Length: 82
Image (cartoon, rainbow, N blue to C red):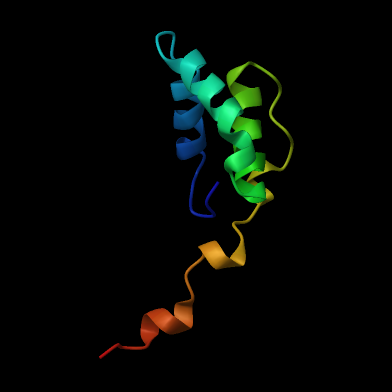
């Protein structure tokens, strides 16, 4: 998910989707609104939904990077604002 994530965020989201009380409702809600998400997020949510249902995890999941617009620009962080 994030370059700095060791898999704990991903695994936590899968566990939430597998929750016996509310997981199915959350999965259904995500499926119903999937079309409203940006393309890159649809890929992430589809992968989470597959994993929550017990489908094998796609290979090289951690190699996916966030779109450039969602990352911080290091140069702008170093420039003080007035």
